Length: 318
Ligand code: TXA
Ligand code: MG
Image 1 (cartoon, rainbow, N blue to C red):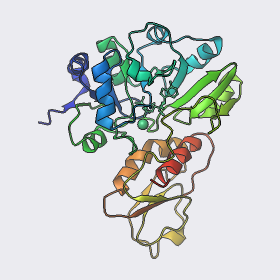
Image 2: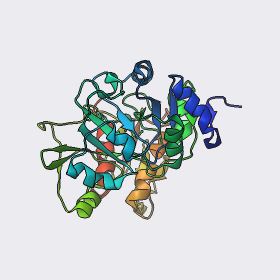
Image 3: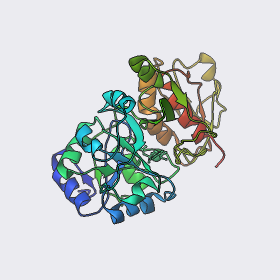
């Protein structure tokens, strides 16, 4: 029996691990998180060590509900409007309250805190069992692909981290991160909640963070989410020695001389399905032998914005 795998019926065991100041990976609707008690300095520190994460890169704090979130951050009227998307794949960067119990290391010295209320049932039950906010970055070594199932977590940390196995993540991409500056909403990271949907629901435009923005997510590095193989984007005809990550109908022209591995993110061209499959398919194509994975063009609308963001970083020079 694999002792590092915990099943949702053993939530209390996962909670005990976290209460004891150790790490436990858990599922969310976006990706698996590497969880620790956000009020325990040593536990939070070991997140950074385990991931080899740079200390300037703050963590997201996961809350059970709005009541818990309100003990940590200030909600302006606009923040309250955005909180209607909770529980769900949205992270809000808000002014941190003074004298919270949150470890200083979580926010990496910033006076804001990134908070989110996950919708995943297992995550919800874990938060309830621990009764405290959980700091959790994606459960991958810094810079690598984010895990969307328990096996990916185990493989990437060589079975050194206990994992609460809640199956495959329903969304498959990290949360959308928004910050508020005066009365403006700024998207710091495109993610599993499409910007278009937020804009339509609240009737307000969202600005995009760029290099010159006052606020940014310190973790949005140019090279990130990277498989071992190189990535070539917007490819309609992959070369014979490449693997191919397709989307929509694969052109007939592809097949004659191409015998490499193919995975199709969504044969019917559905961006939600493509988002869900992105990291696990990249991981499957990245078998250690293939040198280049070429990727079909993905439309840049809706969830395509976040998918293309991840692909661009994954293909950036390392
Ligand atoms: O879906 C998700 O958000 C997953 C699951 C586990 O919740 N978590 C996740 O965490 O993607 P991580 O650590 O991989 O990415 C967090 C991002 C980083 O880019 C970090 O710089 C940014 O959030 N961030 C955290 N706190 C921030 C703050 N106070 N201000 C600006 N950016 C912040
Ligand atoms: Mg990450």
